[in-house]
Length: 449
Image 1 (tube, rainbow, N blue to C red):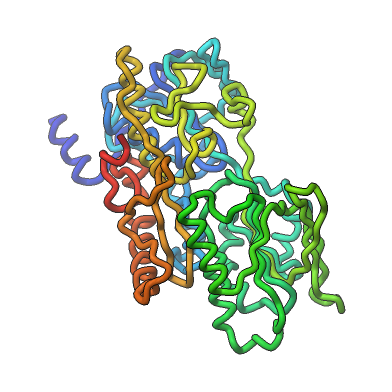
Image 2 (image 1 turned 90 degrees about the horizontal axis):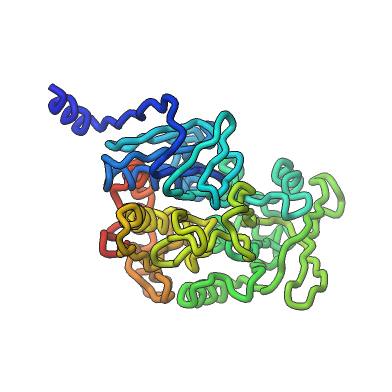
């Protein structure tokens, strides 16, 4: 009877239920969620339970922190989601199987030397800690940014960090009426680094001939806080060639510091962006009529006991084991991994980490290796994108989606890639949370080890 019930649950797509905690105060393995969303922690939990369903593991995370489609904000601008509510699946997506506990509480303090976690109601000890913390969008890093985002009608400022606002991205071409159209990138690394709508917006502006006379003489300006657009050289070359093709002026080493904007009723409509030149230390200004800003990131204060002088969690880039506390493992964009740790990367990282935790608990060498596989979606037009993949060597690896920007078939390939990527985000979202895939289409176990 029990076996038939289990079979029914697997065919019906059911999920395992958490075990009762009782008076338990020690965990064999603890997965801690922190930061912007619970996606990374939920993915880690699902992957661990998939590979080791009989090993007890605890999931610790505040139930108020949602699970969202990571690229939902970007796809929302293309109408890929019906509304904002369809972008979040649930607060917690239980694994299909596994022996796990679930604590709906934030961790108040981590004591790695004592192997303890301080929660709101109790202190717990652990054998192995998995930090699945996500970076948070830093909207405080630019003066007046939050005010400007809430006052779009006057400021004409957009960013890709909030779902409601990212839905306005297509309005850029409809409502741009003069001055420079500016796209501002922060200092890397930042959350969803590499994801870009710059060329999509520029293409729409160039196609909008009905208002062209109103912004005659305006410039498209892309400002970068680094001395590159994208940290991966071959992708950077593609983006530089696209910028040249579309007439986008790229300015490097400029970090946005303040937004000064006028009201739409003011006679002098143009507003001002204040930058710091990170190379010279001087202040520079750019007048703008529209701004698309990609906000910087900040690391949750909770992980402070685990970070080094760089402000990130130091881990071995192959095994994902902490450099100092050997019973601590970490993944995601709070680590110092020299790659872009979006969900395409953490899907691979989670499998590597799950195996290495098992090896660690059995006093075996950590044989599973992550080689830095990741990819970044770059939206080249409405319903068009490229998805170049790369690894630690910064060489190109296939994602089965195009990275073609120059051939005469590039536009068709980019349209087909968008459809596949949309399917990946919609159809395979729960598979990622349950550890059933390793990254973009075609990536297999071999890519993660």
